[in-house]
Length: 102
Image (cartoon, rainbow, N blue to C red; front, side, top):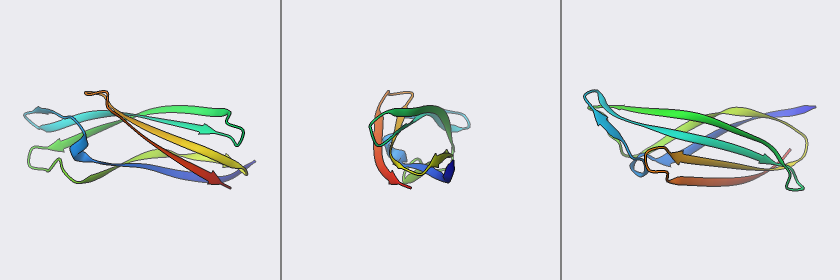
């Protein structure tokens, strides 16, 4: 059964994103992918979500930012969690991997 709900966050620098500027400020869209692998390397799940980032005209597009990803419900075991974030405007991708033992 489920042992834990694991919260996930993807952190990145706002300067690394490409923005579209309009009268109300700047905006961009990120595609966030989460893959979970078991201890034998089998892909258990792949989830995709979007993060729409809006910055008002008087706000800065520099510094750190965080995207919250829905929590994962996992049973006891060892997992490899891979999070990839893709900037929709440039197709640039950042990837982070974490091993998790429950």
